[in-house]
Image (cartoon, rainbow, N blue to C red; front, side, top):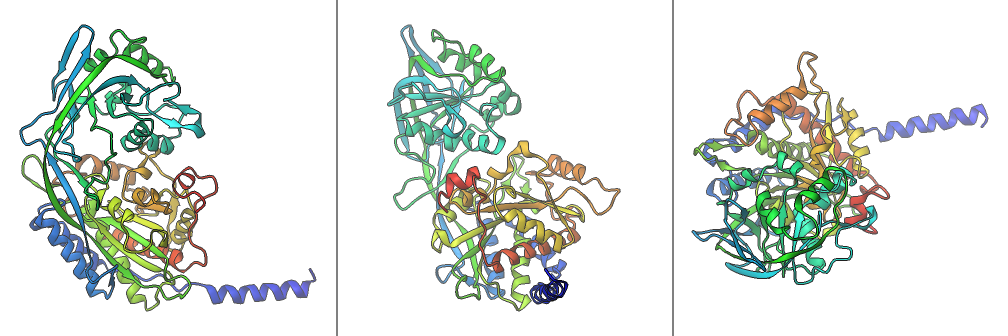
Length: 540
């Protein structure tokens, strides 16, 4: 290129850059965030447990905040999307499990040999069928794993090891190791029931005794228009979880003992399955109660005629745990009054910027996260807009506003172009994007954003990073101390632990991310070949 042409091209490029340089990021208002966080984390709301008056009051408060900002209800005249739930409790009835063999019956004891949850599918259930061991119960052909190969489980109860083989990558493995996926796989192969056993490695991390402590807990699920629980699998009896000594009974007289199977797992092998020489008879019963608890949904309409029917969805869970065993209110200031307050402030920044986003923004305060991501699951399957109109999800769950920070973490950043967007937005806010510091926790599949991922929507989940602005502060130690001393405890209060400079930073970077996603010419996309994109959004 001739020098004059090069200079001319550079000049044109400079003018274009000036013309497209985004305006400075707005400053978040600390007092707004403080007021909203303190209201939601007050004792008067009694811990915001799903379906309680305290939760209802918090939902009405958030709806009022949306209304005051001039946002629009989504899909109707009300900001509240009522979610129908079913609560199932034992009501004095206990499930039964009897092992039937050639030498007679063995009756297992509830709360000692096995535990189960009250069934949400029916108030009385019963099943009797033969048993087949299916290893980890995973069918992942893309990774060369088929634990059902050569086994006939049609009409049988499958016996499944918890966890996954070491050969599966962590997040992929977490998907396949989830109870939901294993139940779906079992039913797809014709099973009518399932039992779960810990491996010794799993027992060390999550002992059977811990499950026994919760044997009287109620079950919870949302209910569809067909009156069926959203997570139920028709034809599959509710499962049971066995202690190891009881599990060994199932393998007595089989071609391999349970301890032999455990040795194979310890040596990194994926144990193959085989029939077990027993039948099992299971009964279960429950008292059902209907509960309504709303998601709170608002929209800021987009301005671009071509893009306004696409929605960037912010989500944050509004519910918490209610009270602890000693009757103390568990207010959940960081988890997740903070996330709701940040979402509200992000909405305010957009409204007061005077510059409508090109795409529409949807703000969703979801219920029943603490019950198993149920509110977001219901919303993602019953959105007030066409499902494919949701093009991105940004999730805010327990951001840990503990200190002014230099970096942010976006779980899921490596799966879609939202990661690149987040890195650029963070730089605009004077921050950097750090990698997941705890990949072994597989956070990507454990919060509300995953409900959107399962519907094919690219998503990220944001928390503050571990690098504090103060060189003398150890961000990792502060986060770990919060998780150890306050997380899911009555000590998670709106007190001096909440750093409002961090809150201001976090709202600002959320605005920057959403602004770029909403105004970009191209919607976010899964990276080519990404496991979750291929699984949940084929051809998307």
